[in-house]
Length: 327
Image (cartoon, rainbow, N blue to C red; front, side, top):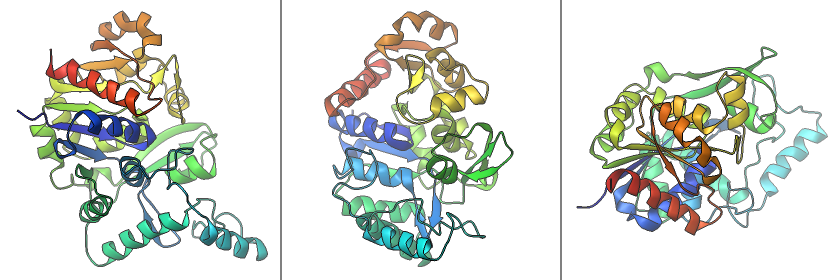
């Protein structure tokens, strides 16, 4: 029987994991349920960073240096925007909060994706439909499902009481400002995207990718029905710790966890995920904490989790499959 795998996904860590997963499981048996809390509108264009990073990575077209954007990209359009802003004394954002000076860099080829998405959305297509069309163009066979087609926005409140969109926090502020609160605007009214809940129900294995728990996984779980569906499948759900040796490999996950009152360790991740995942995969450097992970209520698997290349990502994916399917 074919193994059906659903993955809760967001960001570069999820993209790398999915690339490893489709090396060991046929794409037709994989569904990625993707965070849209990072989505934004820039220069009038609808941008879906997590969806695009996953798409480009699986299509072997991602920029290998940054882990996002397209390889061989050029930047003439955004440089022209910046030239206009500089010549006219325009600051980073105008009074309406628009990216007037181009602090969010959109490459020339990447702009084609956003132009297509925006034109199709304005013609009445849903984000799910447009995402499927883009994946088809790149020759991808997995299901890449936005967790919702409705408006959902991750909003950040800083300790100095500023309210920032996620991209303002992550890109403009380089995620260097201390955070006091994260909220997911619109989540309560959002509906799960088509096939999201059914994909979780029929999956033989649900993986929580090694993504930022707070701003990549929590927005997915915030959509009504999703957390309950994952919790109902707890015994077949495995999470991969994004914390290795007490730190995040990339991004602000460790700082956000600390700032919001969580322990920055695999034990802290176990406490974070224990309600809806039965198994946690931790890196070998954290093997000495395996007993504490299990004391927090999760079965612990020790395996290499640092995805230095495609082969390492495939081995990690195989470990997750073995942890649930083969036990």
